[in-house]
Length: 177
Length: 164
Image (cartoon, rainbow over all chains, first blue to last red; front, side):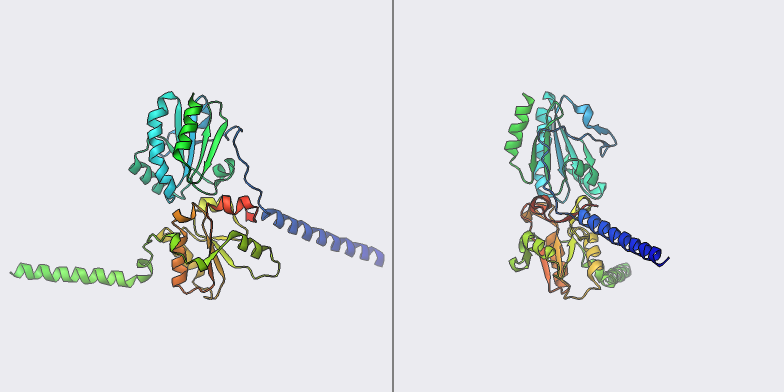
């Protein structure tokens, strides 16, 4: 009887110990050393569809056959606001050749984004982004971040931070040929 | 003549009322978010990412309170392990959130604030947040220096993050 009770007690302690180990392992996994973000270049651009600030649907799949410049930005990002009027100009210049810019605002609320888009008079659609879309694109943990997507839907290049606009334009021209 | 006098009195009353309303809410008035460049933060108050990472790895060390004062969307994607979100420093509402979070703390509390939304010299958030905490009297206050952004200077370095 006593032996049974001791076995039962030992099992209980073992279970508690295992439980604690699982909890520790889970907490270590949750705040693990972060793996460097992988580049998406050469891979299929993650599919998304969402409404732009005017209520029209932006579906990346429907843009297959076009060269797409996907730009993550925010109203509080000063370098983003340097780039956006240039992207708008490119939309007007290269649009007829099958080029499409899409803006994704990473602002916390859409009102600020809408005001800036109206102020800049952008010639391309803008949708609101979120953590989920950022994660799909390899984590957008700093702005601006821009992806150039080829006609076949594969990511041709990605640009992080203040990039040389001439370099981006060269890549666009090359992709359009 | 009499009409002028009435108008003058009315103007005086309105001016007094406006002045009274302003002085009645000093807490809010000071939170009109003023742009403060990250470049105004004294070099001695900056902390390098590597230094914070070492501090977090040391088992026995007292961990600072780490506050992200930038984008909520970026925070939701990933943030420094153990960090809390405290509102964007470039917005008046963000500074109120930050003030509310720290107001009851001892002014000797170790605090590290960070943003990493954009390249350091273009960050709109850390400057106002640093100024607020400094003005509140926090003496062990550091600002994490991120030259490029949070992804480049923290996540890609393999330092610890929490996701969701």
